[in-house]
Image 1 (cartoon, rainbow, N blue to C red):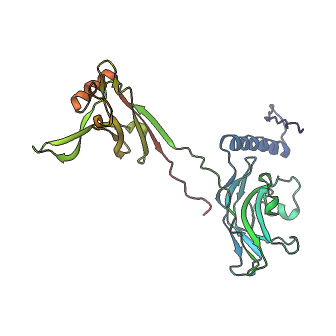
Image 2: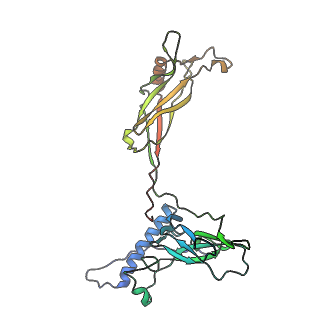
Image 3: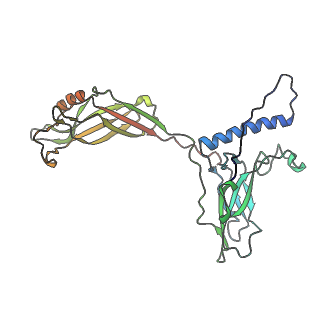
Length: 322
């Protein structure tokens, strides 16, 4: 049985007059990066492609020789950022098994920075023609689809090899993993005052023989301007309290609550009254609430109120890799 790995986050401390070396600054940056990775991994469960990293076979027509990758950002299973600032062209793998029929995955993965860079890399630290700006942070690798594990990296493209024509094509079964949005939706909740909710008559829109609107329920206006919604959210509302009074044998048959007139500052909550006496076996002793005055008094006695929740999804931020 493998023992769990012990991890301890450290913090770099200094004293007055200390002589700092390049390694001290690298240690400081590494500690900050470790805490950021733990945050990405534990709080956001960030794994997959966040934006960009769009891939296509090149040249445009067969035979294909490489894969073009656009700039973008991804996160591996350890929460580490995989940032590609410039487009790259990755050659197709040349060491595949002879006569392979199947697919391979192009992985982007983390590569730890090296303290001993070759002279040609040192000369391009301030001016990089291609690849990432921070040398030694990412790399691309090919791996057979059957052997890919989440810890190997983030798959960004799939290539399928076959004996048909063309022998190399994009893998039709490849679906890349995308991270969930880090921005949480805007949620707000509230209630009306129990027993003091202002109810109004709700009409069906029709008129009786005397030209009077036909009431079929009650409604109340819910104010949500304090929530700070900038777009019309999804509202959910319900009636709280008992609609049955066993002492007075009164029942408010509010079986169809609904929402109307939604806006960023409020909505209307509607209760419709139905004649349910025909559906019950014995209703001679029941007193149904069927008008506004009776319901307003009944709601005050039963301390009825409306509870609501509003949910507004955050506006997606345009992809910066474009």
